[in-house]
Length: 287
Image (cartoon, rainbow, N blue to C red; front, side):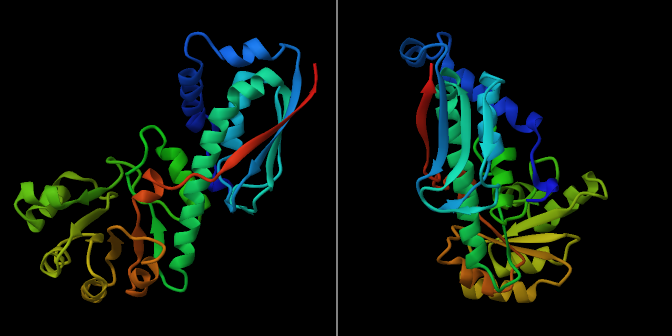
């Protein structure tokens, strides 16, 4: 992973703090505090139970430092590495109470982000051999967008617009309210600055023909059959980026990529990706 793709603590620590506060409530970890002595020390290995792509190791293990700065973490694999069942991702050492209390939050974050990266990597592989790149959407879990988008990049995908404020995407409901594609684009161009790009969603070839006649930068070809999608790509001038969307899976991605689209956007990458099964194998070391 290059330095440019990494997140810094200020981007993920608020998420970890909120998750820990949710888990600890007002009374703290009743089970651990009752069962484990305050001086007990432990070592735990974060282990992949299934194969996949690791993502968010440093993010997830930062959970322990928030609880106890004396907990140490030795990372065994890097984000972006493909791991096998039984492979150790990181080793955590320190007070047993701190490790046990932070275990679930750390595993939730690590499993989820690794699942997003794994699924992204599968889609990237499915579209290989063509120009299409895999991009996520704004269908992210509230509060987790920066983390989930990071995991997509770890999986080999690239970013779409990050939020409502960094690009114009005129969708079907905008078009309906504005009274048509042309009216919607004209209003958008009159309002935005010269650095902001404009994309229009279309679901028919007639809408596409109208859209590409406007000063737009990209066109979202939504839920089109493969043959129609291929025709749409051919009709779109080369200076306009083409994006396909609509229930695309690793099974259908090769055919979609073969149409020549520039981007394939997948919402379920972030809202429904299956978590990578990761566990903490724990062994006491005294106390």
